[in-house]
Amino acid sequence: MKIKNNVYYIGANDEKLDLFESQYKVPNGMSYNSYLIKDEKNIVLDTVDKSVTDIWLKNLKKELDGQEVDYLIISHLEPDHAYNIGILAEKYPNMKIIGNAMTFNMLPKFFENIDIEKRKVIVKDGETLQIGTHNLKFFMAPMVHWPEVMFTYDETEKILFTADAFGKFGANKEGDKWLDEARRFYIGIVGKYGPQVQAILKKVQDLNIKMICPLHGFILKDNLSFYIEKYCKWSNYEPEEEGILIACSSIHGNTLEAGRYLETALKNQKKNVIFIDLTRDDFSQAVAKAFQYSKLIVMSSSYNAGVFPPMENFLNNLKSRNYQKRKVAIVENGSWAPSAGKTMKNILLEMKDIDIIEPIITIESTMKEKNKKELEELSKNI
Image (cartoon, rainbow, N blue to C red; front, side, top):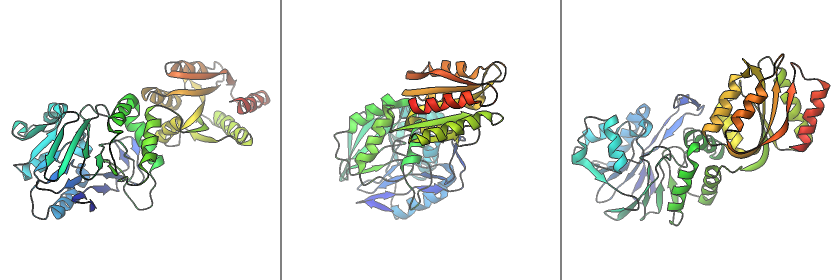
């Protein structure tokens, strides 16, 4: 599919996939993007996952129309993009491989039978490569989200190829929206590396960009400032909007009942609130929503002198993704020795710039009138 003068999309959708990276639910499957620039030399930008190899090869063959592949640019070596490097190298023995020093340090760990020395073209940060009428400029983007990642800017067509950055979950389908699945993708896949994302955004901020081509999700053409603004917020760990996430983990339903009571109280206060049951709702969506909103309320049962595992897992995932700059309220439940509140607070205090709203509300087994008043008071003050 032609996307610009002599630039083609040759990627494919895997609509059967249910879990991306064996952990993220993808009810709409997943897209694996790959691109071809046709010029005096033909350049492929990344391959695809093994699940869509046949479709990708068919797309490549169609657009090449009998010509050879002269160069392969490796933006990212993760297997969902790099699986077919060996197949392409075998099919086109004269094909050169463009990457950075880290690319070629890592490549033998995946492919031991490729003659790298004969093929490699090492590029550095800011270096350009003229291939026919297309002038390509390379920007290193280490730890966005692997150490070898790099962006490629086509100065001729004003296209920025961004590896996993600006990608989203889901197969590419007409009518799909970007924001929610892009947020969930960013927080889950890239979220730990905010400073590194900031660094690459600064490198490319002065480029004249007409199109962003990621390795997952839509090709972005219109209103690019919207997408870039979201990435700036996410990578700065700033809330997107004023609002409250109630994240609840309940064993027998009593904490859940209190959580729903609090949700209603907040809605009565005209607060922007969303409720997530950590035992049933999509976990990656819970983590993403925590980053979306300015405030968080964690409510959990006590468990084994600690906290119920779904909540512990949730908080540790926030911590591992550098969750910060938020106000957090804590509600615990325990029948004989409530321990969830202290455990949750200790995990939260390991995070940066977390303002814990005191006091911790303690429910003993079931919600009492006293607890209802405390929850109503919290709904007014948070």
